[in-house]
Length: 219
Image (cartoon, rainbow, N blue to C red; front, side, top):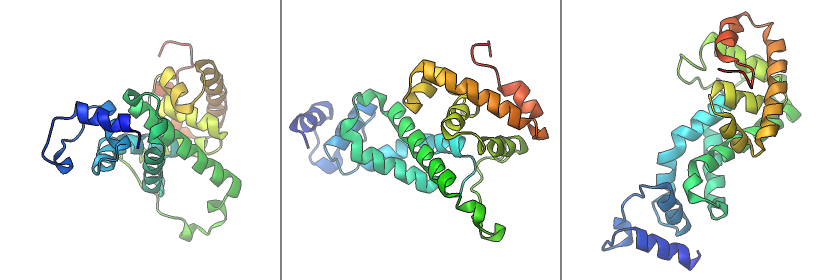
């Protein structure tokens, strides 16, 4: 581990009798420094602080899914293995969001290529993990994800982050690793394709009126 990171942790943390007595880092910057210095509790602190957020992002992109917990695990494994490449430690949350989005993207693309679940008998399909009833378990949200399943992967993710997770355009662009102009074009296509497919879903009529505002219009 680079010596400067260890020195930074030592300077920022109060003196303690032993390394095991160090307090939990309060700032993201300090947490990243602790991770880079291989503090024994840093990984647990990262998970405790951000697992709920990462899970929310994954659920918004994937919908009710039996593999959400596995994907959460994958996100944190990737984060721990690549924390030295994080340019701005203060942007830890946004960086984890991007990792979650790309982890979900890879999973969706593998499923599209393999179509594994489509060939299993219904009785062998895994039980979906249903998050809170007033969101993913509602009829409207189940219909949303049925429609999203038919969209191109990048369009699906952009749509879910913008209209299901409620992210700002700049957040969606950063999470997807593209420019604001690119995400606007992607969302425009996603909205058109979604609206067309959603006409076959009666449960979406009220949701579309309330939630789907064209980009560039006032919400």
